[in-house]
Image 1 (tube, rainbow, N blue to C red):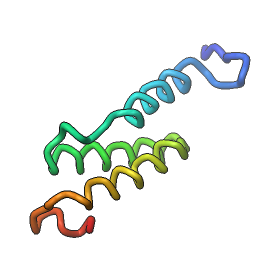
Image 2 (tube, rainbow, N blue to C red):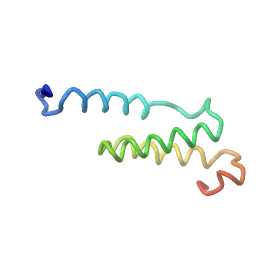
Image 3 (cartoon, helix red, strand yellow):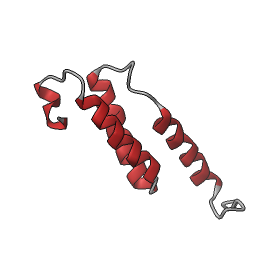
Length: 79
């Protein structure tokens, strides 16, 4: 039986949101282009699945940051 929290979320959903919040806060500054793109893709997918709009917003911001880098042809689609 799932235990409901006062705000209506179950414990699993709350844990998933906490994990997504950690992913959302993560910077891509120390990541190479491929790792940064993987992080952004994971953030987009997980945020969409969970309906986590702040994660999607952050992913769009990170895409803009990644586009400012010198990306090679493999990652040119993000520019």
